Image 1 (cartoon, rainbow, N blue to C red):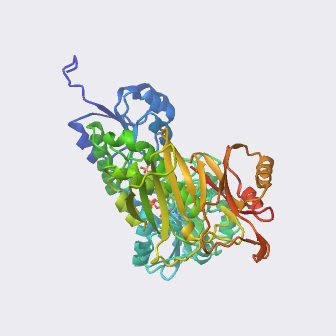
Image 2: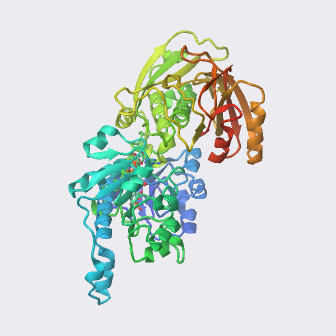
Image 3: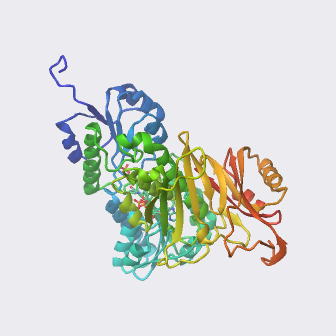
Length: 596
Ligand SMILES: NC(=O)c1ccc[n+]([C@@H]2O[C@H](COP(=O)([O-])OP(=O)(O)OC[C@H]3O[C@@H](n4cnc5c(N)ncnc54)[C@H](O)[C@@H]3O)[C@@H](O)[C@H]2O)c1
Ligand SMILES: O=C(O)[C@H](O)COP(=O)(O)O
């Protein structure tokens, strides 16, 4: 008991408007302090008293705020996006970040439909005109959505919900999403198109529902807007910055597209004179101040969801939707943890190296996952399986959608069409220095509509000559030594490297001079090499002739040459232009960049 007679209950701070439905759940066990309107400095001064912090999108949960929160065990985001939370700092400090990935999907989808109709029928402009005392019927003629094509960029939770509602309005539905679940798309009557260009060309209305990640930042810019119909209208209820605001404004001013509806902005609130503010002022733009999740129902859902999780964490239980929490239970932590890291890296390496994002082929693959040596005797492989699924999806999903843990990993994998067949091989691991290894081998799902024996290379991310990798080559083996994960096989190549940082992976003819060529091009581009590993071919399959392929004609030429894999750890991003320049006449067959 405290001196004032009150029991020392853990304290939770809520500096934003969060629905009382969830907060009521906290009252019995915690001291609940609702303190709206605190400045960043005031927040920093009081955070040390609190065990938990519940925010929405406005509070900036910075590294210094987290460090000042000496007692802080959980930051709960009453909503989906955790862009305002420094996740890396939270993870380093052992603070669990939870969110509510499901609670506001319907609200966001309904708001998209509201903006769809508003932009089709000039609702915003008409309302403003009438309030200004005008009666401008002929100037405000709209278009109908029935029979028009809705293009959906990102067919995840919100995208699919929008699709179902728009189908009810009589719209034709097409989507571009390299990782969409084809059966879910079919069930919502959505046709998946293989390229974004097709989506842009077909859409009368284009709606964005991707996460905001490095690969989607500015994904709709001047070039993409130029590929749309001049009568098309574009909607963004996802995140500011996915559409380049300056390019959108120019396209509207030049009449390259007819209108836009925007709920989210690069900087919120937009600052006077910035691109977002000028966009909002444009007569063909209808805009709302990030209202996608602002319904009574969604706010109740997210509040109850995160408050329940706060209670769980403060009483020592695992949360349901932790963005950065361990996918491993404490008692398994010591033995399995390095392998959890290894499996996550192997999954991420697979997606980036073998299944880059712009290929038409989906990440709808069956895998064999083989635990070898002493790892075959482990009691549970659930954390390893969860880590693999997390790794496979991490390059294509934002952190806030990546709530994968031992409880939900199987379900998430199923939803994404990923099949993993786990097996154990007790054979002694042959290599010296370690006793256990794991092999991930892809088998392309024969039910996949785009299943084929070869993989189409991604022209943006993977530069390649005509010679392709067979799907059978998609194998990764890894092991752990001194708590450090290593990759010992990548495709047909024996190797040994630590899967960390930015890696340039080049497949080339095993001939002198290749290292010099690659090193020279990187040097010219100002990229430093941290380490390099050259991997010879493991063994050649029967169909792998040693004939060299002419890079210009694609024809086989007489001289035989073995292949090798060069893995270079580099200190910064390598531009697509540089990887493309490596491939071709110098005997480099393929070059790709992965970030692990
Ligand atoms: N305005 C709001 O208030 C509000 C409310 C809720 C959600 N959101 C935002 O809506 C967006 C979608 O949320 P969700 O819950 O549906 O996410 P989700 O993770 O369920 O779906 C995102 C989809 O985008 C796809 N994708 C990833 N990269 C892609 C690419 N390059 N091209 C095409 N598709 C790609 C993924 O495969 C996935 O299917 C997020 O940005 C989220 O932050 C906004
Ligand atoms: O990420 C989200 O959940 C939405 O963008 C809503 O954000 P909000 O809670 O600030 O309305």
